[in-house]
Length: 134
Picture 1 (spheres, rainbow, N blue to C red):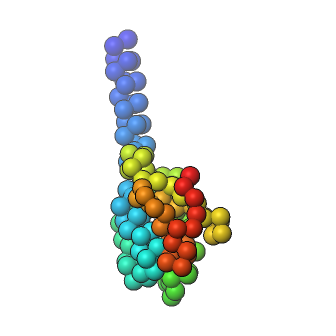
Picture 2 (tube, one colour):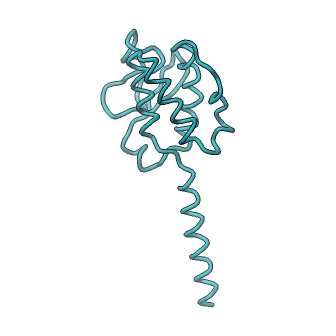
Picture 3 (cartoon, rainbow, N blue to C red):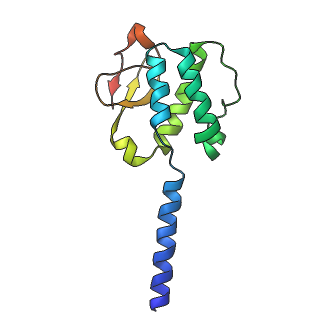
């Protein structure tokens, strides 16, 4: 019986570790969100590259724009909608708890950002505070 209980605890511990091993870190995503909100295409594109090459892992199946060549910030912002959905669904819970989720009804999209004033990545400086905390 002791072996059975030990085996069950071992498997549940492994399952817990396995579940958290596939969570996505949020720091580069937040850098990308801030760059888009600040209308900084170059830095946003750089963050996107890091996310695709080093952080997404098997989530590239859910977000298929890693190989896409973005020519404008508007194209990258459209893609950021899909990327945000992946990070909201699979971001590290501990990190998500320290951030805030927001939504832009006009862009029909959500995002995650640092707590504080809204910084809309979909419209940048032209509508920086547009949206709502969710």
